[in-house]
Image 1 (tube, rainbow, N blue to C red):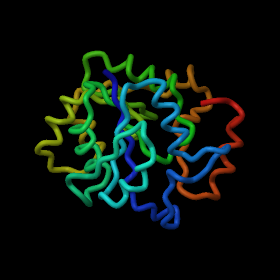
Image 2 (cartoon, rainbow, N blue to C red):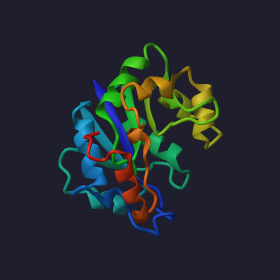
Image 3 (cartoon, rainbow, N blue to C red):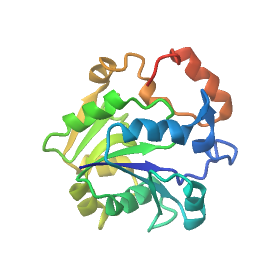
Image 4 (cartoon, rainbow, N blue to C red):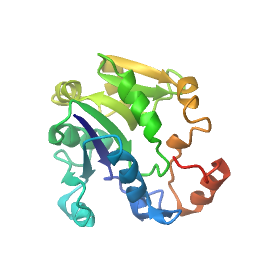
Length: 201
């Protein structure tokens, strides 16, 4: 069984306080575009919000389960902690909510790449990683997050048995790397159209 965890609990400071997952691109909200892609690849999707009030924003989406951080106020690693406890699959694709062009083919490749490792992480180089567009082994996350000290995703990745997936491999599937485009402000939406937005992700 494959699972996906979508982290929506950020404070959206760079988006002027607006919730990025409800930004609209090509007639669909970010969250709807992301869920359409994920449901074609995984068996369940768990959305992790920062608190019960934020969960209510997703109450009408029947195809997901929405939970909230168990350890609040510690950033994305708190969402990973809650999400890894809630899912049923041993392999988990983790995504941020501000990536409207995530590619199902890239997700498939990451699932296939993990092998017997704890994680398959796209990397630009050894210092620039994409830990919120990656596949993890649930058991490894549960073990690490049970007693971690650092709140850094990079530190977590370094402490797992990680397979780093080079961008050159991903470019063979997604030449313009649209799958990693993230949006922090509404004004940036037009920039996606400069990346061949007429192609389906």
